[in-house]
Length: 322
Image (tube, rainbow, N blue to C red; front, side, top):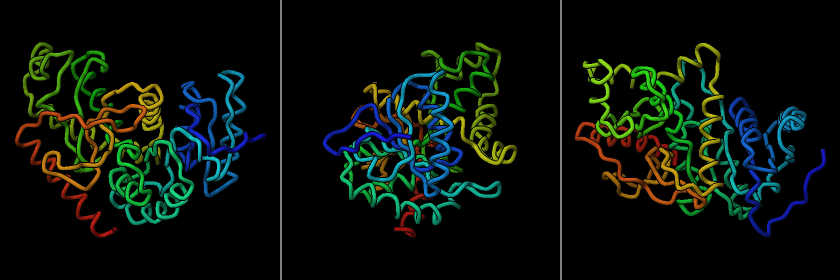
């Protein structure tokens, strides 16, 4: 397969690099090919044959899609990529939490990130590997990139799951539901119901419109189901990849189109809510700059307490690994 000429003179806004071609990486590569956002995609994996096989497999379907260069490459090929996506890492096993993956995947990142940094890449670094909040922070520290250029997929998928389940509960289009999962992308995440709405109507009022009155019970049940979704999927099919692939595609859309969309991505906390020097999944304006600005979402006292507790959980682990 022919490879395009390498260049480090500028960013190619129609080029994306994928580091890691496992379940998540390959599903994301396919989703991005279908999106039409990019005209060039380089796949990199420790197993070069795997990267070449995925590139061939997707390329053979291009007559049904749009013209695009998809090829297996190496780190020299990422220099001019607009977005560098990292999905590389150990898979989460059925009996593992995302935090159990820390040591294994931090070691992998200590190999990957310096290779990106030494090539002086100018694109956006998008971390997808788990635990995503900790690895986003690790990527930020190891790369030396400006904080706006390093973000993680965060709770974008968790938030989509919340919207989907609320839509099912209320029998409305999930796209009309406005609510966030914030904090850790993991067991200490929290659903922000205090400011949740359905097309401008507070969630509790809308529930009553639809005949639901036991708000606290329903909210706790739905939040728990969202939190455990990945575990349930892993138990049933050994891995999750389609949902996160669509979440990554959504983040890439916001960046490439300079949409200034508000998404709960993992980004650096700098004193917001009394939390600093760590990455958490919080709503932020995502644009061509990467993280443009964090959005000051309203939290009640219980939610604020839970957010700080979530931050403390991650902070302890960060101190042990860095």
